[in-house]
Amino acid sequence: MQVNNSVGIVAAQTAHFDAPLTLKSGAVLPQYNLVYETYGQLNADKSNAVLICHALSGTHHVAGKYSEDDKYPGWWDNLIGPNKPLDTNKFFVIGVNNLGGCHGSTGAASINPATSQPWGSAFPILTVEDWVTSQTLLADYLGIQQLAAVVGGSLGGMQALQWTIAYPERVRHALVIASAPNLTAQNMAFNEVARQAIITDPEFHGGDYYAHGVVPRRGLRIARMLGHITYLSDDAMGAKFGRKLKDTIKYSFDAEFEMESYLRYQGDKFAGEFDANTYLRMTRALDYFDPALDFGGDLTEALKKVTAQFLVVSFTSDWRFSPARSREVVKALLDNERTVSYAEVTAAHGHDAFLMPDPHYHAILRSYLNNILVENIQVDNIKAGSVA
Image 1 (tube, rainbow, N blue to C red):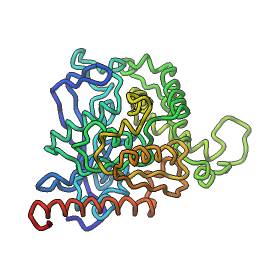
Image 2 (tube, rainbow, N blue to C red; image 1 turned 135 degrees about the horizontal axis):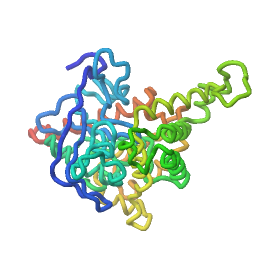
Image 3 (cartoon, one colour; image 1 turned 90 degrees about the vertical axis):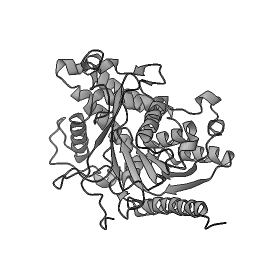
């Protein structure tokens, strides 16, 4: 057992699947890889596994570092580790890079076995349902029949919700954080503007830019800048930047304000790291997700077969996935008499609050996850005949 608060040096692993995967669109992936990381130890009866589902630009690298000199730990390192809210002394935590991703799992930049060239524009459109299906196959690969919990923020929260709908017998708890049962029209509009920035970039080449040895950097840059604005609250941007100038006014279109400089930096950084085809497919999956669609828009009916217990968390300053959207999920679960806890956290960071080490927020997660452990102990005692 580690005594510090880091999972330490970690390494990614790859699961290869030869069996074809039929997607919701009808397209078929003949074979594919899923890249993943694990932290902590799987217990004897494999009942302590927790799956982390990532958001739009997330990866499998959820916690720890790849080397002692690595400056950047996993994207949820403040939450996951020994003695942290999601305690790896007790839980076996799995992070996975979704299909279509650009961090090792099969995606548009991967080689299409039929052509021996990158998939490019031929790579199929994916859905949240497809991701969850592939995640169940990864659980099978790891020998895990039921997850103690599925945890996700934003798009990750949608995946956690879908797990409980599609595979109710395979997940005991779902932690749905800063998420929604579907996107509002405004959110879909933001996604479309971001996609058009990429698609209309002259270097996009219809999605086959790999063959041209170029990257639609300008489009990616704009898409990220737009997205970043929506992830922050007005208060957070005001507190961090306000109307501060970098220097004296020059009466130009250069980055004269600190906010402009920050957005350009974020855009450039993202364009150098992320794949444009992945961005298009991730945002499209967000658009398509709507579990109530097949039930006449009735979310209560869509969640009727859910058996998992829920923790739903929202943030007061999150205007992209507002608390009202989380309460829709809570209401539908209560309509079905399911067990659900709800927390609305006062936070100034906007949508990005789910990534922050807010003490109140982390205390809520810690308390809920500790209760899962108590539940496991009770189950073990019943099996041993210690509890009547």
